[in-house]
Length: 572
Image (cartoon, rainbow, N blue to C red; front, side, top):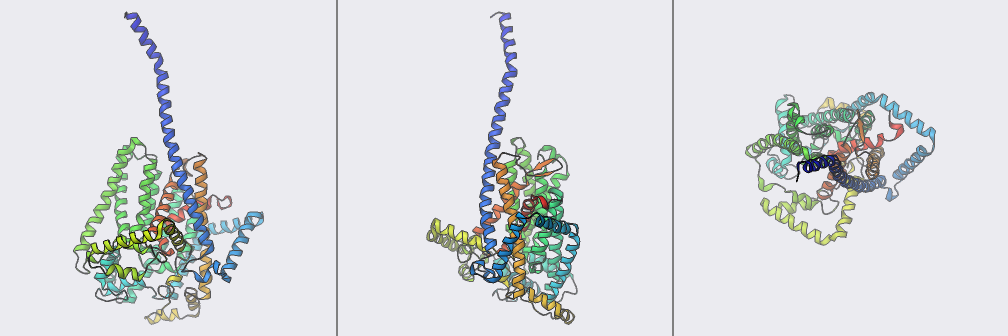
């Protein structure tokens, strides 16, 4: 070949370079589009499935039927529930049809938003009234832990001493040690009732601080409308409920859950998690602290870490292959923080001698799965006694596994699916979070041993409030129905959000829905995954009534706030 001929080939190749580059770029975009398309179909299908579940949830809330809500079961032709349902339907029709009604609702909403902090102070004042009305009333695990703090050798109505009970339920060790520290540190806490009252005050403070924290998180990462909805629903559903005075892990894990949610929002708000993100010392430190907080959450309420597990799934869906190393490094930092807190704590629990830990008495996860497969799906004493009849931990596990397999065979696919639908109804239908189930114990008002406090308790107005929270009374039934209305509103917001996101994904619009400062972030995907995780957990393990939803209330409120804020007259 001559030099001239070679040069012609070089020129021809150079002329083709731009075309080849364009073709390569087009192929790359096609691959990316396919990846995005599959991701979009996967997430959209997930939102559709969640929408179906939420539709069933909404129906259960409207029916208000479960073994714990016999008094207000619509299916039983109860007069109170019939009136509630008719009023609710008339209101929905009126809002949908009449502009003046919509305008009135808009005015009421804007007034509530304008004076929200005054309403918040009113809620705090009402909580003080509730404190005197209910007295030192509590029961079950919350009271047993306090009993063991005062006297670890006492035998409670559980039939166990402190060491045996905490070995049974090791996740209550952290709560026990915190209450023990308060008991030792405060000189005026010298009796069981005094410690109980202090813990009730702390429980109320935790609920109120979390309300402000939830509002701040929603305002920072979502928008003002969502923040206002979250604050008001939190105050009504939990702040005015007797559960805010119940000193147990349901409420005490809330601050750490809210912090976890704030970290999740923060991580998802980052455009990319890459080397540049990790090069700033603040970000790795925050991720490490995230791991520490996660360890505290896990040891208070293991199931409360489900939103963080959902975060990992959401980050994988959002992940770009070029940033795998940075994401892996972030997860290692998070795991490092978790282990730095969890390993020393578990070592301390197993070596302390105040209430010695006995692994052979521990209940395995299989026990709670087995218990969740019969009856209402909730606690059964016979199931507990069956597990405890086996002496060693491994014998307990083997016995639980055998019963689980036997029940699955007996149910079959159709039978177990039907049972799960009923169980789903049991833990989703009650907007009071199971108040009636605990009416004869946790919510049974008691007099104070302290005379000045008891004088306030016997005040005529306080006694009327006491009847309001006494299970089975007509006034308590009315209160539960008011809570049910706002609970239906909460569930309606979640359903609206899921339906909106299903439509968004299948129409191939913008994937991520909340806009803040011109940036779109994948909050909806994370919240939906967390909600699905919560539902799956409650379906598989012991639940059976809606008290178990309290730990997931932050996720539910964020989702509902986003859904309800999409209504035009709710926006500011």
